Image (cartoon, rainbow, N blue to C red):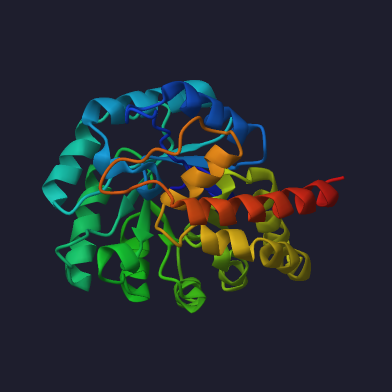
Length: 304
């Protein structure tokens, strides 16, 4: 069914906040344009990195509206719609304004730790309700359970509008276990871990939904496409140069690190987060600043 090309680098877009905690819509629009102009293949809006659980329904609707308005169909837009109550997620899919949205990203239900059969039935209901293609999101580190490859394959075979999975298990071999099976031709596996993008692609993934790409879209898109084209050594060289930044971004949680980095790069005007998340410590900000200065020099030489 896939009517959307999700190969390459997607961006898990942050939600900029002002110092008073309100959404900085102006900064969001600027960040979207920065992405579109610098090699991003598609945008993922209202995912984990967007601090979506802290947003009101009014804020979510306005963020979605502003993003699709600024994008103007230049790249696809994927909207995060998930939760741990199947009925509520189904209702959202049926009632939401999905104009100019190309696909839905939906996370495995969190906190209640469903069985594999529970996951299957949850996503079966979502697939039946969704007017758009659906991308599964497996992130056991946040959810508490892992969606097994067999469950992914079963869903892909049974529902033609389930077109892919963001695989953030941390195990590239899980991508290999999925892609080794007989799947619909247009089903895609995407890395959900920046630091493992190259090994995930080597194991059958066709791209990544990235956090670090918020700050370095051109560089990380280049890495991703090199790996996809089989230039593994060149991609690995860039991955090695980015190892420190990818580690530091998650030392105090996501999106704490990426917001600190974007603020240091003057791509957003405040590194504010909403509780229970708090801004990066001065020590982490200092390390990020030193790392990004070195990475900026590397990138300038690479693209000279």
